[in-house]
Image (cartoon, rainbow, N blue to C red; front, side, top):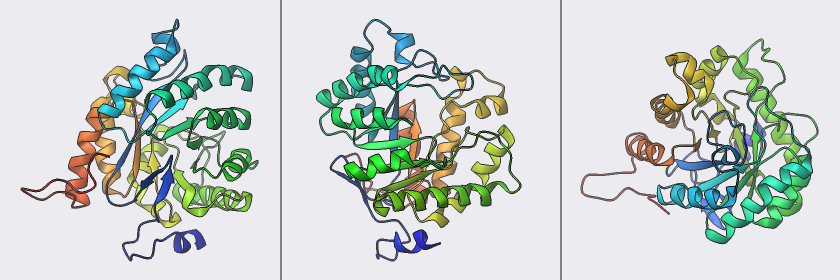
Length: 305
């Protein structure tokens, strides 16, 4: 694939070139980066939606949680205002803007250097969030044919997460089809003017896939490296993990940590999680083993920013 060749940084290490997000350079392959999740929703599947836990003043809670995540080692934060769980309440752009833009602005004011991602599918929301201080667009429908968020990313010169998704979990060959869909999304984004170094791929664990297909995806994560782009994975607290262990959402931390460690062994570059501290610790140990970031008597390379 052309993207897999041209995206290399020329160092011979096989990793994509660095991506700048909010003024911070993310050097892929040196260590695993951790994205903390801030859900400004009343109906998040993970039971952490800020409108459910603190409906009176979600901004205060959001800033407090954002600060705690950064103290726990989060490298960037992902803010979303519309739940993506099955049966979620669909929002129009105005309602979603009203939820997320004040939170983006408040978090940006409180944490001026932390990169912020906006999790949305709506160009109007993306534009407003970028104006409020967001640095990265996270598109859960990047494999849809319209490519609206890619045009926004190109116009503002910001990175874009291209996540795989389908309306129905129907596949003849799962991984080849995921790769083909993501490659098509990469080409659409490039055609819209997004720089190749600004593209990150996400295989969409839990989106448009059955539990069995989600497990198959995890088993074959290394295939995503064929795309030549950094890989983001979001398994945190998701229902497939609950199905494996027959546990509710509040008891899926260990399952999440297992996927974090195994995904790092497969070459994943970023993990999107709710429980930052525990996942940072697992990532650091996994990096020490897989990436060789630690030696006895010395500090880990590529440590906390």
